[in-house]
Image 1 (cartoon, rainbow, N blue to C red):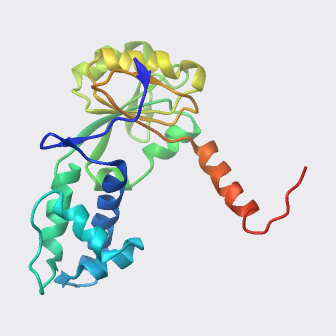
Image 2 (image 1 turned 30 degrees about the vertical axis):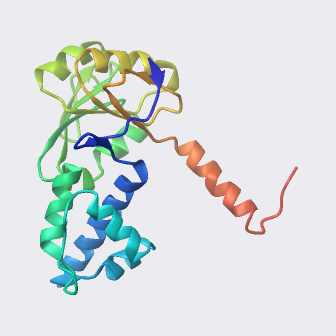
Length: 223
């Protein structure tokens, strides 16, 4: 096994990470246009939402098929629904979260998850004060029962909000339960099999990127 960020596949070919990120931008842009009452938009309109070029928008969408009509643009509702299907947002996913600390608790409260079809069904922790109690309406189970509970409740995706020291062991239990998608918030590299999709969010590294940007925008260096 090796540390990796898996790439989704479509019709036998890889879809790049950048394309997936842009599809998410298009989906949010279309949602915004729909709220404003737009019926159709151009690739130029959609490009502005993501600070891209119209050519990039057309190229990304063409990878998944034919969209819109030349000279008339894209029907907003129809394109939004098609991108939702591509991203898997047209259905619901059963989610479990491991680690009910500060980060985990904040994720449980994140209202966009259920709106996008990600329903947190189970919580896990190793703190005996939290186990067998409800946290924001969701029962907290002992992490020792992780693998069996994931199988029992047919969990599709697991979010890890655990310390770096326990992240790999918890991941191994998740993998043993047959879960194929993991979102990791632990500040460490995790090894998964090739058939498991892993996404890692290292908040410290993101902040370091921002601080680097500040330094290079004229803020004085301090040594």
